[in-house]
Image (cartoon, rainbow, N blue to C red):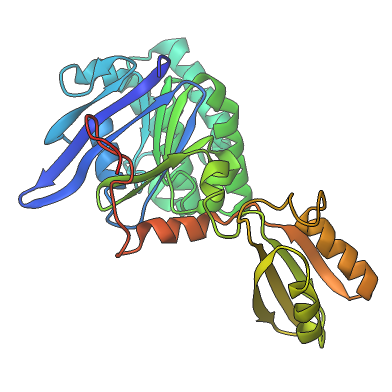
Length: 337
């Protein structure tokens, strides 16, 4: 990738006999927002600490904007903003005092520092709590203080560990909007457990498990690996389930039907023989159109009817189960299995 601003090659971290991160390789270009996913203990935070220079790798290398994180640490760190897990800050400081302290560390002075602080405060909506001690703030506001310090110097690279952790829905929306607004000019890595965040703000996702990369692709490409990709779901009222299931099974191309009771309603999910392809049912009729025609013909009471894009949570579980084979993405110099 010629425009890569973050480059990771064979990154490995061992703690005694335990290997936490095992030969991870990927790159992130300007304009990309990379969702970095994995179960607890997969090696996400360890990887991010190595990329940012806070933890030395046992093997492999990482670079930020062409600067090797180990050989040229300060030059690399000048190019990045880092929001670590928990967003640590000095609790007896106010947000204004803390941001001025960070500005001083970042070698911002006078009017330049004031402008940077004002920009970060406005972006993270901290103006109403600027003079309160950080220890007295809610978890959401403390998180926003951490986010403000990470973008204070307008870095070209951002690395964020759970940026919306502890935020309410409105605050999450504002942080996602901020990230989307910055994305075109930066390379951004976001570690998150919130899968909806991947679809909302990420252009690409990497899933790791037990220290290995097990998937790397766009959210759409990952959802296409779901058994629900292009399935059709409809929710019916009472007393329709058995008759509807029998009629739906008779449609051309139906392989199976999943039935899930939901109180007084029932959701039926239809899978075609050609998983992921709903266009070749009854000539040119798509599966969802065939289902809609049947619904009208039968006069069923339908609460919802929609085509499934795929379910990222199902793909995530499939890739990170204890019995799943790891290292789906081959290491440099190795052939894919």
